[in-house]
Length: 90
Image 1 (cartoon, one colour):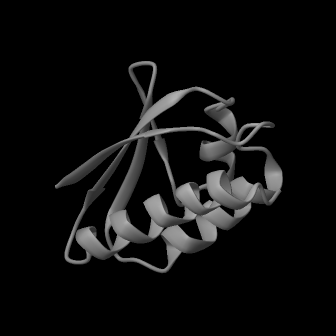
Image 2 (cartoon, one colour):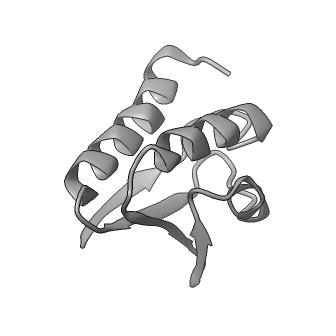
Image 3 (spheres, helix red, strand yellow):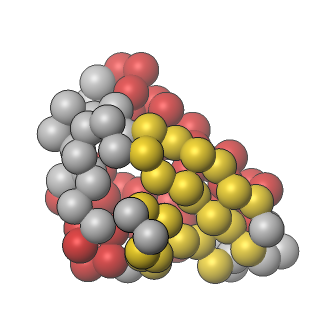
């Protein structure tokens, strides 16, 4: 299992567009990918799951990847979230 602590930096949080892109990226991997927030777990491959987390700017999450491609999945998803922080895309 690979776990990474990340902070949501999107000014509008993970609203529909970035949540959809996060799910698309997560869906490219075989690993089980979960987002942990406030003692709850959300499936990162499920758009409804990600949206139901109601992640806002400043929220700290744990991204947990378990499976054969867990390292690659973790790196790709962290890079996506960090890219969103760096360039401000929405």
